[in-house]
Image 1 (cartoon, rainbow, N blue to C red):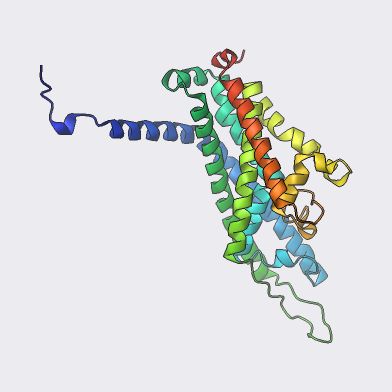
Image 2 (image 1 turned 30 degrees about the horizontal axis):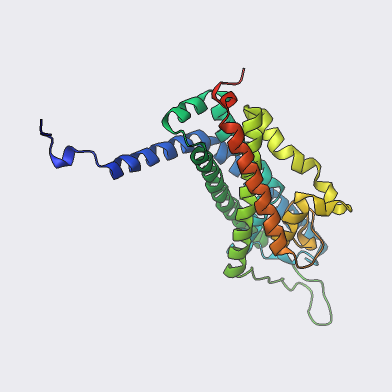
Length: 303
């Protein structure tokens, strides 16, 4: 029997594959969209409020002093660079851990993971998709934070311009001008932060796979790195991921707990080794998450 359908009605394999890819992406985004919007808004508010407070304090002193980076936040590149740094520190960890809990643990807790496995048996592909969605939404959060921070700091600068103290070189009331970092510096910071966010996502996915519940996954994804952060200031720092993250991001001491929430690593050349350490940590977490998610235990809803 011949096929009487016209060529236009014959489903092309590439078209079916494109529809399948579009379907899973839209499903993932529908699940994560509202939590991502809420989390991105919270991060933007926290970062902007902190920067505005620091600006107010600097205005009261009449000088920026060590806050040279703060004075550049009214520029697009300065705000974007600061937003990237925040997402590679504690705020980024909280964002990624919470979102990964919704995306990964939510599917496990509600029994959706078993349905996904019926249509796609390649667990590594499912894990890669979910980690990709979390990373992409984190990039969107960076843009939201940068835009909010830039607007707030423009308003702060217009209402309360920072003035240098009088000196022999400059009279009183001279407004401090600070240019933002170059785009190449912003790009370098963003590329470094991408690796950090990927490590956060991998460790959070592992926590979600183990707990199979949204709230415990969010706590387990963020709490271990948070409570052990003070170890960066001890002799044990080289054995902690915090140390290598700070060295990889090259966090300066001047911005510690101001432009980002993370302890600084001692200065020195070690970014290549730091990158290797972070890659290994991320790879171990991904493999462990894959191993847990392919087990039969992950197919049954949490009771």
